[in-house]
Image (cartoon, rainbow, N blue to C red; front, top):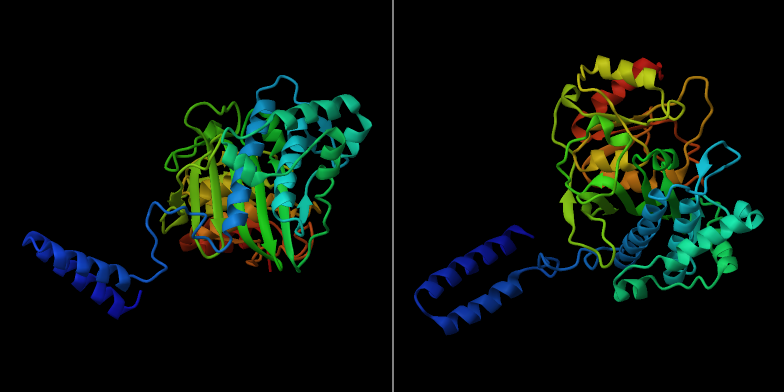
Length: 407
């Protein structure tokens, strides 16, 4: 709003209050009308839907509802004694929850945006070879619905039987790249955390011409309360009991939000932001549980050089990004394991990267480069991840480079 507009609005407001006090109703109503006209059209009433004010309103709403519905399915599997677990060729686990959540999300995206491409983590090969496992997934998918009919109508899509479900799962086979609209999905990020009863996330992001525009994370085992501090045991023996389950979202240039993870229509969002600390020594530090995902030894050296005295909090999935974005944590490091050749995948970072940056944080690799999502399914142009509040990121990055001898 320009200076002149602000002045006119404030002046008219003062006149309205004075005249209201002197019982001049007709003049009051005329001036009230003028003051509304002075306000620019971009100013919105607080009760107005956050999705409607977005530059990607439909994409945001569909992604939020799809993640919410998929989270309902994952929670059913989370509480099951047998999670239908398989081991993939890269030695990482996959469960019936991964397959079912991916089917539900792709179905919703393809119904609403049929021309968009999708890069997703899972494929249906194992289900095609195991009829019993396929039936388990199908039973989950067909029974999982939001309890709000209008939300279900928004998502649309139709998975009519187990075979159509397999076809939908395999529609996440795009090669990605720097052109066009491409969704990326991780149906259960942090499957090992999911299996151990810790943190996991359902993740969806929209990438347009290589740039992440929309990001959504569903974290069923994180506290709803954005101000709840990170606790050391948050990476295991968790539950989705009352007070748990949060949904984070962001649209580029529009900030980040958090809301309770519900079972029907979207609940009221709250703006989130990174913690305002000026020195890294005050930071709450989070890292991966698995040592082969990030070098715990190097992380410890970095924390010591930054004079961080709080113990690191280990947790799986993009829940770490969410924690930094809402100020529960301050630093997230995912450092390359020495001697390893692992390349990060876009579905493990796209949503969390955007949500953290839109909350006032900075996300780079260990060389200070922004994460590049235009190269296909892999982050081939980046090594490692350094995420922190913008006020301390440069200090953290400098120490990371010293410890890792980055030139």
